[in-house]
Each structure stands twice: as C-alpha cells, then as structure tokens.
Length: 128
Image (cartoon, rainbow, N blue to C red; front, side):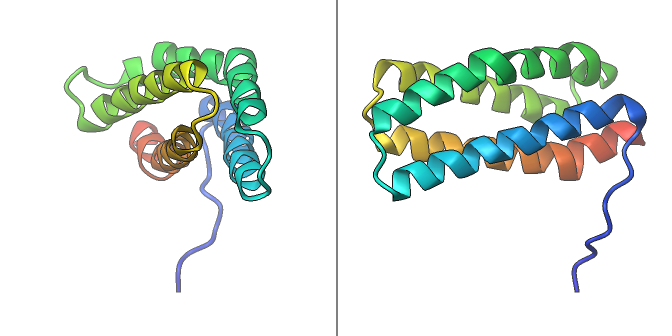
C-alpha cells in the first residue's frame, strides 16, 4: 500500500507547495474544459491569464530562491529548469495557436508532471 502521509515541508518551501495546488487546479480546469467542449480559445485565454497572474512569478521565485541552492550541474535542478523552459515554450505556442486543443492537452500534462516532480523529488532533495 502506498504511503499517503503528507510530506513535512520546510517553512521556506510551504508557499511553493501551496502554489502547486493552484497549478494542479489549472490542469483540472483545462481538462474539464476540453472534455466539456468549451471553446479552446477561451481556455487558452485563461491559461495565458493564469500564467501572467500566477505561474510566471512562481517560476521566477523558484529559480531565484530554490534552484540556486543546488549546484548548476545537479540533475534535478537541470530537469526543473528544463521543465520551466518547456512550459514557457508551450505557453508561447498556445498564445499563437489558441484553437489547438493538442497544445492545451500537452500543456496540462507537462504542468502536472512538473508539479508532481517538484513535490515528490526536487523539494525532498532540497530539504536534504
């Protein structure tokens, strides 16, 4: 049976974990919108708004306050930074192709995978 005990977070990381809840909520909203056939342009506009109002600063804060605590050649840091770049690239593509549901699906999958990685691996690594 999988351990479902919440991971105890260092106080410096707690706010980042709370932000991740809202990122996962965005993933859910994208998937729900697509499954209910909401106009993909409407979903794309919301994704762009959410990024500007929330995710963009979250990424900058993670990079400036957390990732920098790890060596430049640390594998988990490299992966986290690469994920941020890939997410940014997808956001640019979504902005240019707002009706493309495949881009929205890919974005939701990548964002979820990235958040799970940070919560399950990167943050534990940082706490050590």
